[in-house]
Amino acid sequence: MYALGALLMRPISRNDPADITKHGRTASLVQATPDLHKALQEANTPSKHEVIGRQIGATDHQADTLVCDPYGLARADLAVGRGTTEAAVRP
Image (tube, rainbow, N blue to C red):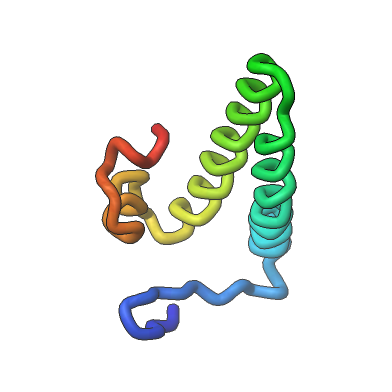
């Protein structure tokens, strides 16, 4: 692991298929996020707004899990890292 200031980074092993898969999945989720937020702004009915909001929540949860697992972090640790309260991080 590498420390960059207060940030701890785990290098991706290019020889480990699981690492490559997790990295690809994380990148895919992160790249989908702006499109989901744009779609949320463009939602023209309450039901569309709710569905897209749930998709954003699910995407955030999946990305958080992929980030937390390799470091043995709990979701509450993300709240600390973000400077928010634990309640602000979806369970």
